[in-house]
Image 1 (cartoon, rainbow, N blue to C red):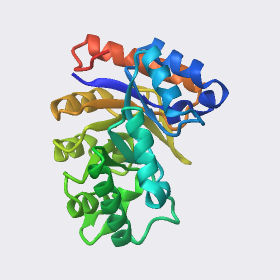
Image 2: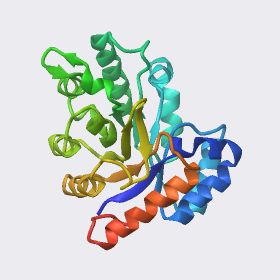
Image 3: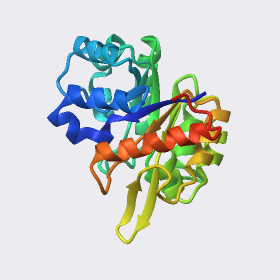
Image 4: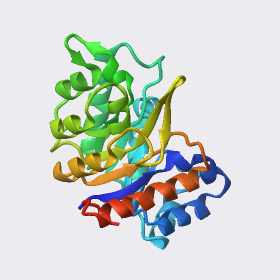
Length: 255
């Protein structure tokens, strides 16, 4: 059974206004865990107390590439203190991309430090890793070919895979066994590019994604909505309500 978490980037403005109250609401809605994207000045002790109070687990932590290159150890120490075993590189800016051999070498070094400390490094994709190629392979596939599964694992963002023209289910099946986390997202294409949507409101077959993730042995399926047309807290409530209905119809989720 899949555990269902929320990527906190979705409600970043709410967290800025009321960190503790927002976390409480997330738990009340039925999410079982949270994936951090920053800690808003809170100490590890404060994070632990808040998670324990609301019976929430740590899914993982999106941690900036440059910060990991500069000082991986202190970031690892903080994450270990909150019981997090997955540190995830969430994004590479346009300025950081291009020299892929150097990026892969840096990720190898970071992953080795993570492994030495009993945590696991993951990489989270957007679209450019699938639209850019190294030889005959997408950057994403080249990365996972260059670095073995015992060094780096996969957090697959299924919406960006679909948006890039690939089948997210095929990618889930491809990386089964090194895929502990999957981002569960929906979207619509617009004249401007992409508009993220609540689950089952866009063009992604999100039930099919959930089924495939469960079959692949994914540990956490993580709701994320980069942007929304309504208040983010309304969006995450609408999405978790759909998740509950999906589970009621036989979807392999534990909510």
